[in-house]
Image 1 (tube, rainbow, N blue to C red):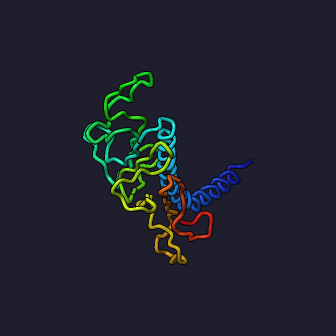
Image 2 (image 1 turned 180 degrees about the vertical axis):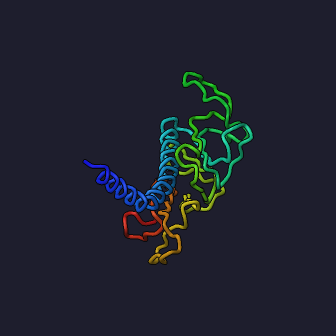
Image 3 (image 1 turned 90 degrees about the vertical axis):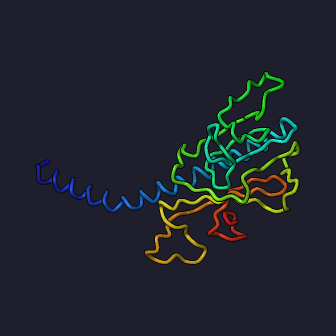
Length: 201
């Protein structure tokens, strides 16, 4: 192989990389949305399973931080699963399973929003979802209906709408929604699709 052939090969590879870079960037930003949505979905399913296992009320809460200054937030990307309100105590130690009388907030698990999804934004109908021992939502004083948790990524662009996208409008993000039904069913869907599409919300 001559030096000229090597240089031509490198030029072709560089051109291909420059063509793929925008698509790769969009893929990375969409991955942030998917990671956040899956983490929230998994957290909700864990909270529901723990409520059934313990035959007690278990709370899934979105919070603004995971330190002891935490407050519940419908836009929080962090989440805490506990048996009590964790406000101001998110940094408490998770109690030992052998402890029969742990102190509040009786944390079960928590997750920082920066773990693989730092650019994702959350917009939830409510910050706290409580499951009872039957795995259903416990909803005292709350209207019946589904709870929606929308996950977007404005750094990557706008969400792809249900209508055909406008070329050049930056509508490149595949935003997701996690839905919790009154019966406690947790599912993830894509708002750009509508029923009866299995992916639709």
